[in-house]
Length: 321
Ligand code: MN
Image 1 (tube, helix red, strand yellow):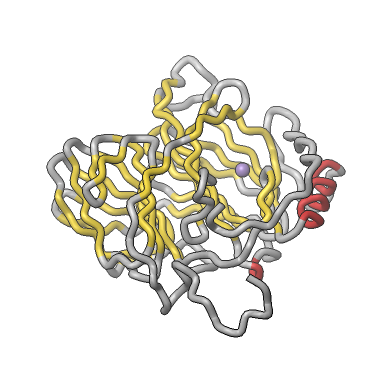
Image 2: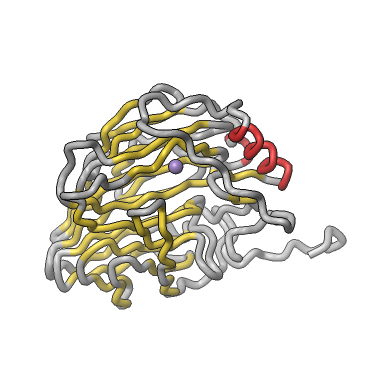
């Protein structure tokens, strides 16, 4: 669309207060990605044709992995810019260190929320003495332009609000659901909730019609709006819903991700989110020269080098590929 257009054209799913989109049911298949030598994850976002759900722009699901005889997760110090990371576990534990001096063990159903702002670096590892199984999700939330240069900080919330209904226990990671609100800091209208369903559950979750939503399955046999969603898959639901029917044929663990459609175009590369090729090039240079991103203390090993930038220029893209 050129700027010569004189009529405002409604975007198909466009922001708070103006939604024309119908609900959809779009099953997103995972892409298998190797992280280091030992860990394999299932990547749900970005996905072919779907890059974001609200400000959620990155979703990896991993495990359950038997790490009884293994070191488990070993992610060396690496940088982030322009985003928040959300660490969420169903089993096991992750030891988080970052360049603001944080040293925190994150346990199941505790929120590890790291706001990178303009620059942070962190490492994530299974503690030496760890549980047998590791099962979780790693997610990113894009920061809007007005907040992407904010000061880096880390939050750990161990006592999150829980909403219950017969057969459902919903833990609020971010945002609000059915009157309960997470203490986690947010920068856009967004929601993230862990949904523990008991076998035989048949519930309707209240939704915001001007949010778009997706549901990630982490375990069990669940039907989301009538669609069976296998563990490691995600169902994109679109906007325009006031409620969401959920049924469980066995105990099941889901994550509800939603938010106001994110209308800014982003450049995402490696662990950085910027607005231009230049943003990304500068961040890469700053990481490789040891400036801006600080230092992670206490990790047993060196930092992760950045890959080479691709030969073709990076393009700013919207939420749909
Ligand atoms: Mn990271």
